Amino acid sequence: MTGQPILVEVVRNGFVESVHHGCLVVTAPDGSVQFSAGDVTSPFFPRSANKPLQGVGMLRAGLGYDGADLALGCASHSGETGHVERVAAMLSGAGLDPSALACPAELPIGEDARHAADEPRQITMNCSGKHAAMLATCVANGWPTEGYQLPDHPLQVQLAKTVEELTGETIAAVGVDGCSAPLFAFSPIGLARSFGRLAQAEPGSDERRVADAMRGHPWLVAGTGREDTRLMQAVPGLLSKSGAEGVLAFTLGDGTACAIKIADGNKRGCAPLAMAVLARLGIAAPEELADLVNPPVLGGGQPVGELRVSWSAP
Image (cartoon, rainbow, N blue to C red; front, side, top):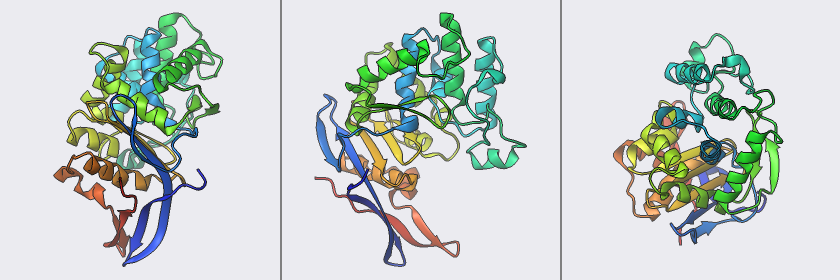
């Protein structure tokens, strides 16, 4: 991530206070690069933007989910009541309970849910839906549920193969994600292309099932007020999935796709960049997303500046 260009400036009272370096790439439906900024060929960890690809891998391994459960299996949910109840139902349907989850106990990431929580729990961790889906996939195949999060488990081997196929790249490195599951490194171009493939896949295919589930249940993918949810609700056909450390990937319905990585890991630069890319693609910001175009910088609780996209598309 070193040497990346400045993409976003933080302006306070007319003074540039901070800058965010990073890279972004937009790929056409055929996978060719339409435009880019920075190094988009070197591998990086896409964090939870991996989840839709992992969802495809689970379907290929026999997971029987569709609709809401599949969306939650690809989610970074806020830990709101509806999220947690549905994860519990997913586990129960596989004959399991929350003790089977290998993700760490955490407080919800949704502000209201976090304030209402008594203590950190595994089921309120934002990746618990993905872990419930992983466990259900193991049960469907007769694989052991113990150690399902380890890289050499049959489930994770299958998911790695799927990620390589969808990105068109060999996995450059394997890490441990914040939720304890394997994390696969590949390039921003590979991430964008994989999202484009999900959007334009044939109806009924595993790729399209994931795309349709997430677009059909945007609240389950993230939660109240979250950017992924808002983007999918406001822009017809758009599929969006963010990741920790300043990652965001999205695709339009025709397979035109974008991957963004903020070098310093601060996610606040992702939304204005996404809106700038959409504008470059001819999609005007819906009124309900106007606050994402130049998010305000506050002073004394009042707007005194804004986040300003300094990147200019060719």
